[in-house]
Length: 209
Image (tube, rainbow, N blue to C red):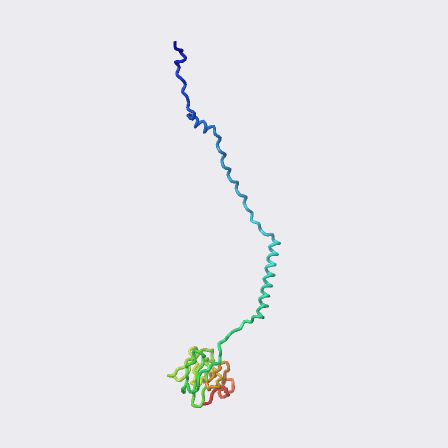
């Protein structure tokens, strides 16, 4: 005869993995939260002490003074030379010029070559009033200063305007080959207003022809 207990339904058998996921997850310990970095300590600006700053400024001034004196000392061993344009020029033979005023070298050497029947001379192209360069006016047969209106004859003699005296003449001579050498650093003048002597007839003020 059958046993009544055998008729009870059997208890369901749980599979090994069923129903353990949520429980395992609840039971598993959570990883510790990452620690927040501690705030960086505020860096304090370190200021130099007043005494150290003062000493630093003093030493800077001392070394600067010594360096300046050292370079000034070196200047005596390396003098600075100023190169000025030459004032001596060879301008050709007397036969290269016709009678009258020649402006060939006005721009290059600031001179006019003037040839007369018995002599040749060179006028330095500078107005004696304030140093402007006059213009040669062949139609008017005169030099005219564009600055203040001084007028000069073809020989450079002043006759109008504020110019106090004639224009200066450069030293001229013939070299060994017979060419004219003009030197505008050696000037001949005639200051009539101050009773000065006429230097236009001195040796070197002209070349006799």
